[in-house]
Length: 342
Image (cartoon, rainbow, N blue to C red; front, side, top):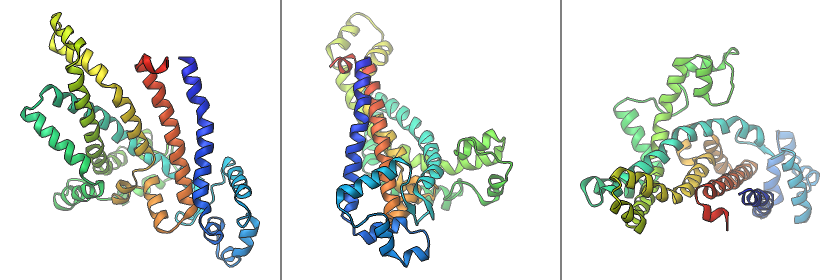
């Protein structure tokens, strides 16, 4: 097992180097003037574009530019975002905790709900509840997130008024957050509000999270439901399950202890992809609900042709993908001995 983990960890720097080379090759297709915008921070610099190009070597050959860019990236210089009007790395540090907060509140229900509903559907195959869940799975996997988000806003906020509108917190509580006495321990607003014992602020933040979380849960759990149902049906027809039943084991022990445990193996991989999608920024969902995470920022940056911001987001996504896939592979090896002994 140690060698298995060591091999996976050794692949990380190689994969990251290859990804950085690929990303820079894409950006290199832009003109030097377009790439120079990432180094301009005021109007005076904008008036001397040629000086910026010479200073950062944007007119030099590809290997030289890549070496300079990689060196700057390693030292934390990802350029300047004209969308957030601050360095890209500072923007990521500021907004990533909000995306992590949304991912935590959405990720756990997605996995648990998908597994539970998939199991329920398989155990009641072709019955009414199975038909209903299959329709839910088809709708959830085919319905665009922006359509579902708009519908939720129209119904729960516009028509019924049960939940607050877009944003992260009501204006009335913004003053509590900006108060110097309010300490930002984690950057996740609901958690920080609880730690500061600002219960009204925490409740307000949680109410604002309901609709974006609900959107992500409905869309993502439907995919896990489909895979879990298919795996459960395949596992329930296996020889060892029939043998367990023949030996007199009860339905609960057979279905949950033996069948579901083996059906969960592909869900480990799906969980990894779900975490990647959430942490890399639910761009559409955050944009619709005006949630101040990484996704909303990069959506605006793409519209403004903010090259450093888009490239910084791509690097962040690459890091998240590599790390989560590595953890997923290790978890898969822990669950399935056949993987770690290959």
